[in-house]
Length: 353
Image 1 (cartoon, rainbow, N blue to C red):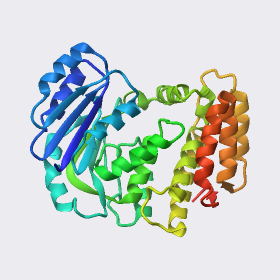
Image 2 (image 1 turned 135 degrees about the vertical axis):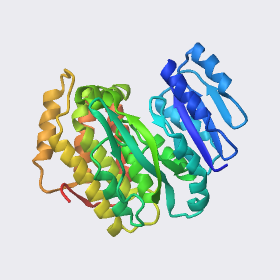
Image 3 (image 1 turned 135 degrees about the horizontal axis):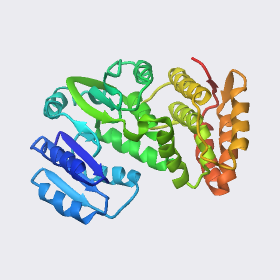
Image 4 (image 1 turned 90 degrees about the horizontal axis):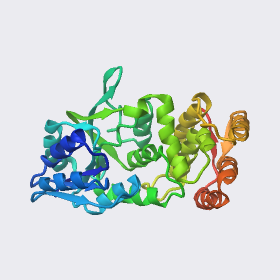
């Protein structure tokens, strides 16, 4: 099987059912479709069961986390490549029909991590057509720079990716001590470092920005991840600093990347951290009435005033100090995981590239 299209679904209603039906229509001898519904809605469960056929599987399970739904559906896939789609977005039939030929032509090249295309970004203000630049480059630093140069939402997540790579990345993500909303961006960073993404000449995916289109509603979604992790909502102030730290630490030290010297890893880590530190500096982050807001603000201001270079150890210490205000156990688990990761090297991080 060349391609597994995976739809972990939780929503219900006519729009969701129509999207599930469209995805199921793509099933063929080259494409298997797997739908895993964790909504717990009996009417939805009974309805989508009718979409099953030889190459289309429908699995209904009890309510669970989104991370579990995404991880468990991957275990069922048998295709050489996998393509996650969301139940509130749209994908285009012609692009899907083109994927088996693209996989047949490029899929045996080990330098190819996956396939991408053109994206339509739907917002209340209108539709933007987006292409990620240079993600098909042979140079990993160029690929990452192309990804970071697009300032909008992370649509590269909705790409076709080699299944063995997705499995390794999923194990890496599941091992992290805290699961947060930016981890899809770190996932794409690691995938880009593992290979190039061939662009097919089609409009591939329409991404509806939805609640992520407004700063306050988007940060409410971010905050829910902190709440679920047992952390105070003021931790949201550190959002982009944590993203920069974790991404750079993985670039420098993770064993899920191909063989790369520290000299090649360092500028990529610097670029990632500098972009995220700029967001940390410039984006207004909300605390949602937290009693810890003043304490966290003071710590953030001290980090912003730090010298030109920061060490992993300094950033980890500051992050854990704030996490400990919510949970000593969570802070200890976070410190243990990341201190082991960064102990493999001791580079400095540049706040500007």
